[in-house]
Image (cartoon, rainbow, N blue to C red):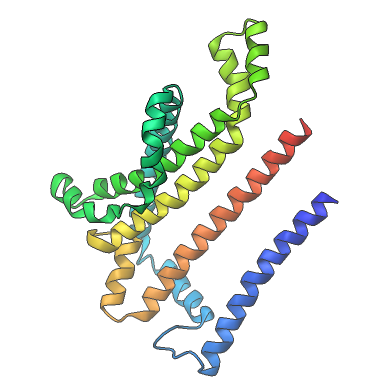
Length: 255
C-alpha cells in the first residue's frame, strides 16, 4: 500500500513538472510569450544538446563540477566537526544560536571581491563562498541529530560498557543518520547556489560565468540552454537524494 502511494506521489510530481513544461511550450509557440523573452523548452533542449555534443561547454562544466565537489566535501567535513564540537559545549551553543538563526540573512556575495583580492581569480574564492553557504546547514543538522539520540540508548551503552568508538558506531551515527543526510542534502543545495552565483559575479570560468557572458552578449539560445542544464542537474540530484532518503527512512522504520 505504501509502495503504491510512493509511486503515485512520484507520478504526481512528474506530472506537475511535465504539465508546467507543456504549458510554457504552448505559450511560447502560440506567441503569448515573446520569444525574445523566453524560448520554448523544446528549443532550449535542442540548443543544450548541441552545446553538449560540440564540447563547447565541457571546460565550464568540469570547472563548476570540481568547484562544487571541493566546496561540498569541505562544507560537510567542517559543518560536521563544528556541529559535534558546539554540541559538546552548551554555553558556546547558547551564544551561537542567535547568530546561526540569522546566518543566511547576511549577503555573503559582497565578500567575493575581497576573496578574489586575497586568493586571486581562480576556483578557491568560489570554494570558500560555497563552503560558507553550506557548512552552517550541515552544522545545524548535526546538532539536531545529536540532540535527538534517545538517552535510554546511551544508558544501555554504558550499562554494556561499550567503548566510545562502539557507542558512536552502533548508537550515535545510526540515530543521527537521518539528520546528517538532510544536512548533506542542504549542503549540496547551498553549495550549488554559492558557487554558481559566485561565478556570475567575477569568475573567469564555469557555468555561471557562461550564463552571464551569454546574457551580456544577448545570446538567448546559449543562456537558456545553460539555465536548463542547471535546472535539470539540480532537479535530478535532489529527486535522487530524496528517493534514497525515503528508502533509508523505511529501512530504519522496519528495523
